[in-house]
Amino acid sequence: MVHAQETEVVLSDTQPLGTKEEPASGDPILTAAVDVVRTMAPELQTTPHSVTGFAPTTLIAASKFAGILVTGSHGHSAIPDALIGSVSQQVAIHSSCPVVVVRETSNPDAAASGDVVVGVDGSEASEPTLGYGFAYAASTGGSLIAVHTWWWEPLEGTSLGEPWMGDWTEIASQETTVVSESLAGWSEEYPDVPVRSRIVRGDPVVKLLDQSRGASLLVVGSRGRGGFIGLLLGSVSRRVLKRATCPVAVVRSVDRDKHPA
Image (cartoon, rainbow, N blue to C red; front, side):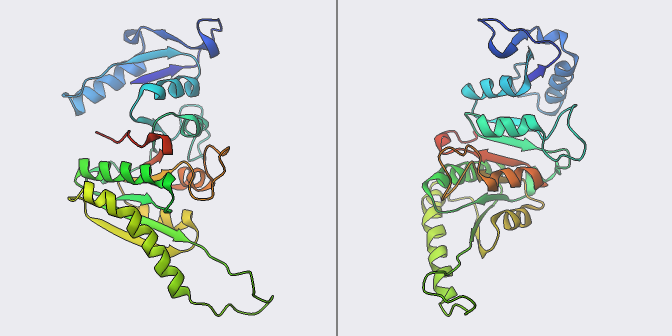
């Protein structure tokens, strides 16, 4: 458990970017948080860290040795109308491990009963995303909904203003095959997780948000098929983080072996 207090900046060679650890016992916010966890789940081992410095820097550093990093959607300094704060977004962009962003409006009962919704694009980058979603669903006894969207516009060989006379059914069938192949291996690894597929033509953000209403978790990759190497967080992930009503997990391709226990 990490609390970053941005009340003092200390810059030195041994403490770059102004971070230093303080006694956790002297941090009332952290002490209260530890008490909550001990009341809700006394069997869990808690290790509190009170850090003086920048919250994004502190959490990004912590992600280098963490399996999962969980953060709220915004903190004390966030603008009320903003659904995701700058700290959460910076952590999601630069974290070394999967990041789960939980907003204040999330339904606490959904975590135990809701579906796990996973965005699937059929690329190699979405494999860790599926692995994380399957592992989470298995740990909570939930089911998994794989959402795959596609948008294909014929341009070559089509005159301006003339309708395309091709076969949309054939294209939809090809997309279905892509999803089936992506799910096959994970379904074998997690045979007890019920799986449903939603394969639709349309905006991926709109479809993911629709399917994730009431879900326990929405899992997306940091970037998917067609993403630029230099783009650390894709447009779909960014837009979903800002608008989803359930917790959102952002999983990078480098996190293949970091599934929730």
